Image 1 (cartoon, one colour):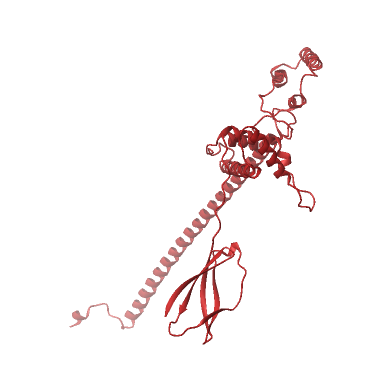
Image 2 (cartoon, rainbow, N blue to C red):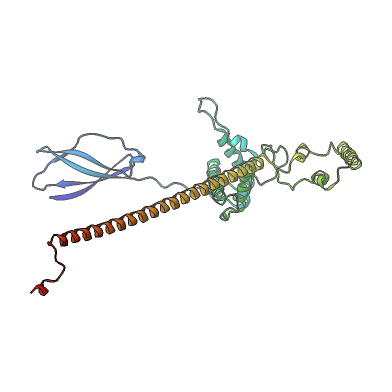
Amino acid sequence: MVWEKRRRIKNGLTCEYQILMNPNLPFELIYLGTQNISERDIRTDYCFFFVFQPRHQLVRVFISLKMEKGRKDKSASLPEDAAIYLVDCFIRDEVQYNERVIGGSKKGKTPRQQCGDRWAEELSALGCDRSGQQLLDRLKGDIIKVRGLLSEERVERNKTGGGKAKASEKLDAARRKLYEHFSGSHILNGISCGFESKPTISPTPQISHLMENEQMFDHDDKIDSLFSRSSVDHESDNEKDVPVSIKQSNASTKNSFAEFAKSRKRKQETSEVTDLRVKLLKAELELTEKKSRNMDLENAQVIEKLEILKIKRETAELKKRIAEAEAEKLGLFNRTPSYLNL
């Protein structure tokens, strides 16, 4: 009897199996059935049944499946200035990049492919020749990496209860810019939601500090009238020069909707974590009190059992003495030793 290894390659799947061979009896291997094998079943060991001729013996054969896939092509590397420009193009065309194809037709290019072709033309004009699909793959990998870092930092921040988050790994200039874009820490001109057509990074606009430091003044009638008159005159003179976003930003110090949502979510998560900690501490305190009460009850029960045993022992000794006294009266019990009677 000899175990022989055989290999069969079909649809990219390699089947390794061992068959019990009998050199004295030549036979033919007949497979009884077929089974569709998917990628999720690669790590599973299967047991198939085969019939061997001429004796028609039913033999179990264990088969372990392995997947042989081709090597995946890596995304093309980009120079630093080209990578930064690619991130700028993504921020500019983010709305079109995230659009979905409407309708059942698959003809033509998707909005994401159109963005990739446009970015490839712009980068080729700068001397960096890459295909649209290569740029999309590069951008997809950067987005996955940056969002993974943000999720890890959010989890670490929730663990610390709103404290300092875990230090993230170092990123290059392009990924750092993408990180700032997704984290909401960038400041953009135009609409505060971040959907403007041509976003550019700019310093924080200088807003009237009288609105911010209004609490420093005493609320007298004269000061209020002077403050209101000066503010009205200032707005009437500079109404044409001030952008819409700066006018709307007087209501709050937040610069984007992402910062509003982020700060509100952080406060809610911090309050929820604090409430959960308080509930946990209360539950632990109640459990400790119950344990201490149970221990006191057990100690009291042990003391009572000891007292009962002591009383039983004294009762037994008294019964013994009474029995000895009655035996002496009847002459059945003699306290003198036997050697003295001799």
